[in-house]
Length: 429
Image (cartoon, helix red, strand yellow):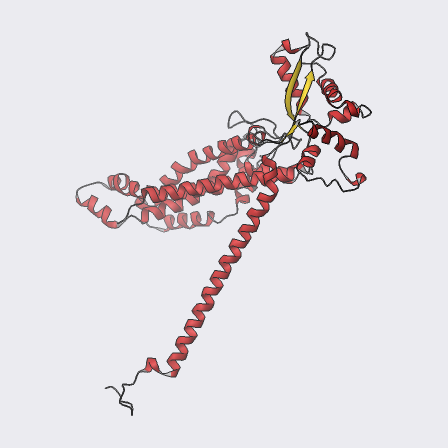
């Protein structure tokens, strides 16, 4: 029975002052929670912005490289026709720089030649060896300058700093300025960052060896973890009996997904290198290690994709007489494939950025050539970043940031591919 108030209105508990206060309190709590969430997102975006801004502001300089155009007179007294490869190409560099900067004749030829990168003599040698008719003629070549002059041209060396605290003396700066005034200095895009392997000279160091090493390691990881992970997930989800053994396996797979990657590196160090004697620093061993780390992720993602397929699909197939195997491989697996591919790509993207397990199997070695096979010694992108970050040369600072940007670019591309595949093949039911 409804109580009637003196004014004739029905008693409304939800309109009482106490209820109104509770509603106000709830709205205030929701507002606080929403504000905290927005604040957390704002902090996360701010940190991301600071990270990317810091990398771009430091790393963009590595995408250009200072070059100087020099005329090299290849004289017969420096390069003998019968010993072309053993010619005095360092002397040719000194002759060329002395002739290019005649007003600096009081400077030592060695100091003038130091403006050029150490690779200039090898580029000159390769060109003369390829065409011996160049002996006795003058070759015009565009070669990179050494790191201190590259830093000077990019404004990273303050000219106002006292001479004794600078890497370059006033005379060296004046000689370089003369080359600039003569129109011989340029700063094109640094293709060598992608086509050269690692080097102790920053102006010559590139990512080719690390890119090829990462490719081999990821391919090995994919070829092993994809079929094994999907097969294990299908068996556990569709065919394995539900008992204590399957529960034990499932719990351990879930636990392995949370194990730090350095543990997998220690396992690979003990098993692959210690017991089986596999080659150290090889991308194949790195791929095996990453496959161990990626397998739990692929198994969990595949099982989740299989579970997402509605039971009515299975029941309909069984109803028309299909076997269990036909139901799984003809109906369930194709429908779950977008989720499986998404999980696999995310797992591979995670593997691409892992550093600790690769360091433990020696993929941080100084390798000056790109690997020809997965069994050759190589580095990977994360370990190359680690090596450059540990280098005392100032030129590697910008190259470290540039390498991080390249790695982030690959990770973003792989995640974008995962999103595309999910949206392209997603089924609605």
